[in-house]
Length: 221
Image 1 (cartoon, rainbow, N blue to C red):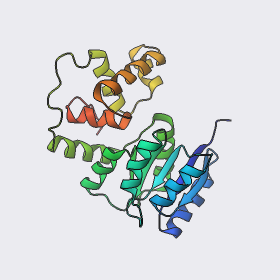
Image 2 (cartoon, one colour):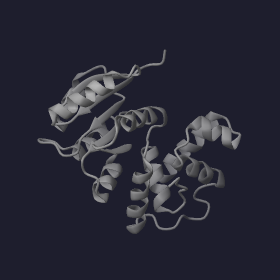
Image 3 (cartoon, rainbow, N blue to C red):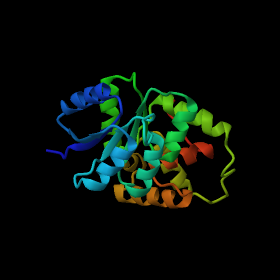
Image 4 (tube, one colour):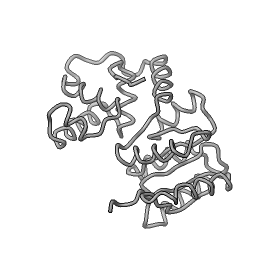
């Protein structure tokens, strides 16, 4: 039996949070390790509990410490924990800001239970997951403000690295990329680590942002 995905839920709307908790606890491969009503409570719990979550499902607008600031702190102090934003805000600025500070998925609160569970499983498997709509928003927003890295220098990334980066943007797993390119998973992981170093990205989501900025992403949208 595979290890359960450990989840923390953070939302100041108690009824909504309890509803999500009830929904997720019905899944055999998901375990709720704790709940919090704001970012400060979340950080406090992370510092205290031994059984830390793999994934945090977090609201953005909360009292005391909001989801954006909490995500920024967690990215620095607990980089191995993945954050899924679950919010009623669907504007481009909110989406791109959360992704830039470290969210690896972004869901709107009117999403279906099936989509939430699918996103959690995809994040657990791949490290990130963006729906077609979120990818489109990222592409539109990032390309429109493209300025930070400019054009890629010749030879900055090898043809193989570009190929792997494009497959990452199509949200393929390491094993899927290895199979498609006739490489070993270990070789793919090596190329992925090189991409993280070369692009100064902290995670796979950062690689996707980099690829969009430099117009080398192939997106299934």
